[in-house]
Amino acid sequence: MAVYTKVSAEEIGRFLTRFDVGTLVSAKGIAEGVENSNYLLETTQDRFILTLYEKRVDPVDLPFFIAMLDHLAAQGCLVPPMIADRDGEKVQKLCGRSACLIKFLPGVSVSHPTTAQARATGHALGDMHKALADFRPERRNILDHDGWRSLAEQCGPAQLDQIAPGLAEAIVRELDHLDQYWPNALPRSAIHADLFPDNVLMLGDRVTGLIDFYFSCTDIRAYDLAVTHAAWCFSDDGTDFHDAVSRALIAGYVSAFALSDAERQALPLLARGAALRFLLTRAYDWINTPADALVTRKDPQAFLERLQYYQTHPDIFKP
Image (cartoon, rainbow, N blue to C red; front, side, top):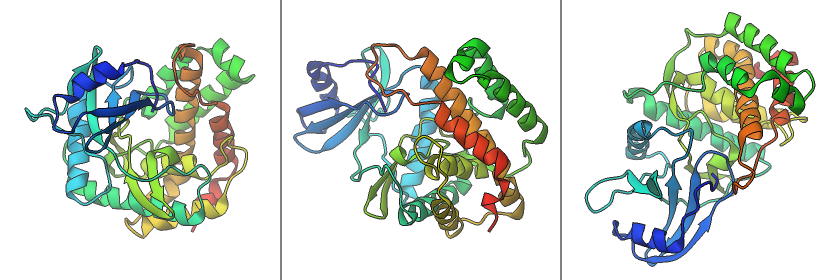
């Protein structure tokens, strides 16, 4: 979450008149994340999240996200549905952006996950995949394996090497490796694709919500677990791997949804792909984020460290 588009309290107040949610009491911009503009709203009735969709969210994709959230909510998964206005519309316009009002879920995001929290998150991810088994809409992953080389080219070799000397060449070598061995035949489904700790709400060791589905798409299902592993099982800077958290996350997942032998064998490669994906998107944002944006830039080198660890420790996924 972030704030690129600044919205006044008066504009938010007028926006809320479209809904039966009370009148505005307070609005606060949320600086975490890098994708959309987000505000925490308190009204006379409840609390909500207001999201304005920025550069990476195409408005034509919003029906997919809405359908996925509605499907998961109907299956009992803890996700935040978007709220319809008095005319039944969920997608609005505000300050020239597509916008949605979203149910607020209780809980906090953890900074240093425990094994119990990782196990609960793995179980919630498995439950989500189980609930999506009969979800039919599809959306291409615009940041999938086929798109990573283009993203690297957009960053540019010189700019990548400013982040870390030799980074551009290291990325090309990894892209070549993944092109040769990427496990395209594995089962596919709708996935979250971005389940970092800040997208999981918790109270103690209990998951109270999975949020921020704006990278959700159709892709290799086990890749979703690999993304979550890369996000949860390292220190923030990527230099320390937490084996106990890793084992708990995977154990929690398989307690809800089984991994096939082929999926488990592919996890080392999928994890390398996940690390490269976030290395590239963080590098792109590092290079291109406007200086005056109210947004927390995230260090690409944290995922270079993860990538290098996955390259040299493929056995960490063995039971």
